[in-house]
Image (cartoon, rainbow, N blue to C red; front, side, top):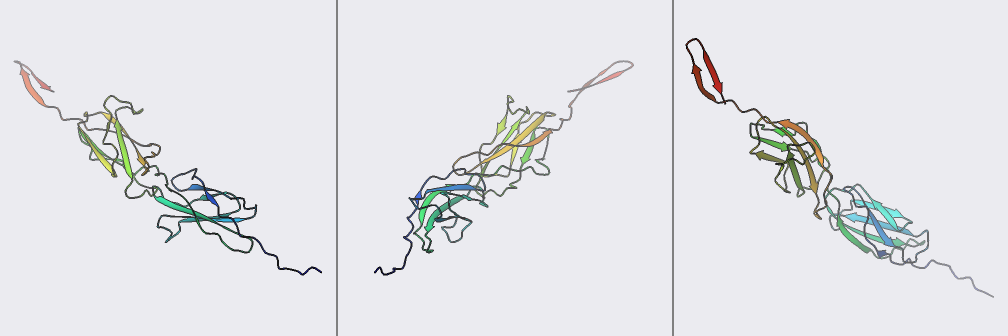
Length: 220
């Protein structure tokens, strides 16, 4: 007669690493190969910016991909995945590709223009979406609202929250916009900051024209 032997599940296979996709400033999709594990195998995915001393995002799924969200912009995240069989026995971790989240677009401050003079002004923006402190920003100033003026100005990318522009034309309207980039040099969309006019320069007096019955004032 046959003797009954206790049944058991085999161990889950260790999943294989695939590239990250759909990387945004607060989320990314982790992808992996299930390595012939049957449907119903649970995969656990984690993302961390602190070598897994803390886990910033995690997911458990039966699929071969997982959305990792609530991430911070322009931060390098390490990711990993492991599988669990029906007896709750885990595989070892598989390291997934490390990647930077995108930088987040800058936000509009209450007053983007300050220190406006006859030939200068300062443009500011807000980091309202929480970019990392080493995020670089690009501010562009233009005499055209299409940002294709003949004398457009920019200081290039730098770790800044504002930029002063000098050598401007008095009484002229200027438009400003800004964007950010992450450590992989992926740029955000532009945020238009509005427009303002430089002050008019005070006229300089010229010598008056004096006649017998009149005086004509003149200025430049």
